[in-house]
Every structure is written in structure tokens, then in C-alpha cells.
Length: 45
Figure (tube, rainbow, N blue to C red):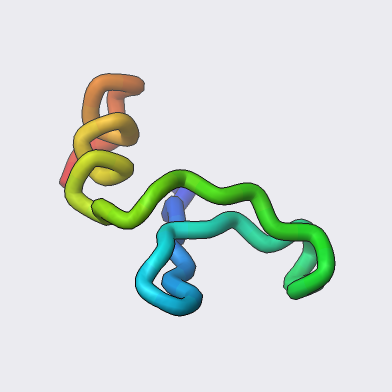
């Protein structure tokens, strides 16, 4: 089982590389859109 995570920093959805705040990938400010992206890739919510 893989459990995807959504990290929120300053109102933005981000992905931290191995928990490093200096290496963030920004996914915008709408966590619902990211959740829907996970669903489109086959994740069951």
C-alpha cells in the first residue's frame, strides 16, 4: 500500500525532498486539485 501525502506550507501544496525544506516542489495552492490528480492516477480515496 502506498499512502500519498500532501504537505502544506504557507498555504501552498508542496512536496519536500526527504523532508528537506530547502528542496520543495510547489503544486499550487489548491490541495483538492492535487487530490484529484492522485485519483486520476488510480489512487483510491
